[in-house]
Image (cartoon, rainbow, N blue to C red):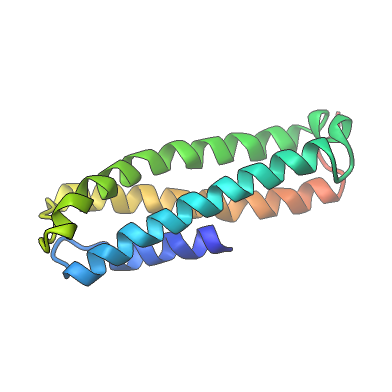
Length: 136
């Protein structure tokens, strides 16, 4: 939920012309997103290996592979926005707001929407797995 919320904050505050405070909010939200996504990854790995239904169950479930693939895709989608936001930090520390072209704002916004869509699918697929669907 925290990762999803951080992405919503990024989506809401990312604009072509925005204030210094809004730019900092986007950068901080992305940091929260990165940390929470890392926690999701670590807890997911621990669940597969040590908890839950056991490694064999997860590795023999096609929906599990779909969930992992979506998580990887979302992670890859997040790289471009994250590197863009990191490039702003020097200017933000000097009190300057980053100047963004409309095309770049739109590109980043679409990537964030893709991440939000992916993070929406992951719990739905978890519910499908809990019903025993996808076991081969």
